[in-house]
Length: 136
Image: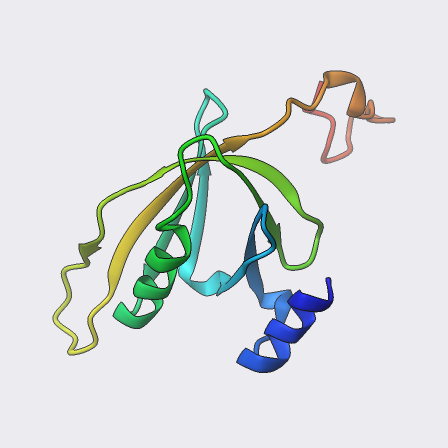
């Protein structure tokens, strides 16, 4: 955790506004959540979509360049706790069509849960009108 705090101080970033990826060896990469979108497919595979400047995409590409398919990673969104996932690959980097002078590049990171969470870990809602009642 101290390495993560050192990263936050060095890069002058607020970890509350970031998704942090951590390799099993301890290397960290923090990305502002303004540049990230996450989608989960029915097969539990997740796509983490990035739309960033060329320098940020280069940093992202360098971070994941030596990660092998199936390798264990962790991610933490806004300091809510690290979640273990398996790396499944990264899409090609594409330039987002834009009329603005600033170039924006898009790339998708594919990950899947490293462990299955059993259904008995979910709690039953206490009433029919609560917002969590649809979870069974």
